[in-house]
Amino acid sequence: MKKIEVKATSKNYPVYVGQNIFEQIPVLIEKKSLHKNVFIVVDENVLGYHLKRIKNIISEKMSKVVVVEYIANEKSKSSKSVEELYECLIKNNFGRDTLIIAIGGGITGDIVGFAASTFGRGVQFVQVPTTLLAAVDSSVGGKTGINYRKTKNLIGSFYQPEFVLIDTTFFKTLKEEEVVCGIGEIMKYAFLGDEKFYYAVCASLQNILKQKHQQTQNIIEACVNMKASVVKADETESGLRKILNLGHTFAHALEVEQDHKIKHGHAVIVGLTCALYLSYFKGILSAQKLIEYIELPLSLQNRISIDKCNIETVYKIMQRDKKSREGKIKFVLLSSPGVLYLDLEAEKETVITALEDGISHFI
Image (tube, rainbow, N blue to C red; front, side, top):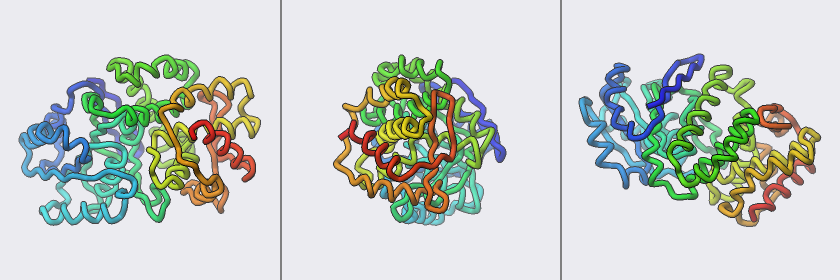
């Protein structure tokens, strides 16, 4: 079991990565002197495969354990779902001496983390990501949130967990489309890291797609280390942490325009393609580098499909992105892996062209 330390301003905590390490949760709870009143929220898909395993392990040495099923999708990532979690907590007499554990993908982690940050003005919280996407990105760093009025993650908080446990055994039940989602975020880190890491991701892509354990775990550890260093420097996204939004301004708008029929990780791959085009149109990225770098997201284009979309609508949704200022869209762009530019603006016509060119590969 590998241990990676996240040193945020508000709290330091470990991320554990390994195979068959879920069984270590009771030991970790004991070791960290966490509360024994445990409220577990589990993605319905995970529950179907692992209910017995979860109950057998978590019930050990705990004072109280309640397991709640959550139907995880973008439409249920809502204030209504948060209220339902509050009601369940209250009904089962949970108070401030509660440990909430989220077991599932990024949506589950986001919404349960938000509930934990607000119930009783904040209770202890543990993340157990069960998807590749959540493992490499959303489970680490303390971002929590819900969607509101067709805007992704508009309401939320920064709230760090007590620890994150990434058991790669959970990934064995993932469908290929979910693995591709995780690779979308891994591709983002490929562009955020240096050229050595970029080429390492390119070389490992097929092995990750086939879920070869060692290569996958190595990449997960590298991504978590990278995110940990960013969070240490900028926990609340006032500066450097904005680089983690590479491709996401395009991706989030596309998800909303498609009424969430496209998965987040797939939208990120499309968004990265659009960001590469925009970097080129802004004169930041050379034509030669555009041709080279675009091969990475396009290597999965046959595994992603988009319904015909309204580009003008996508642009309007981008304008109400929570990172926009005075209606002006702020972009993260790049000239090479590890060389990023924050808060750049672009003319509407240029953005529209980047959207058209990027999306055209996936329709």
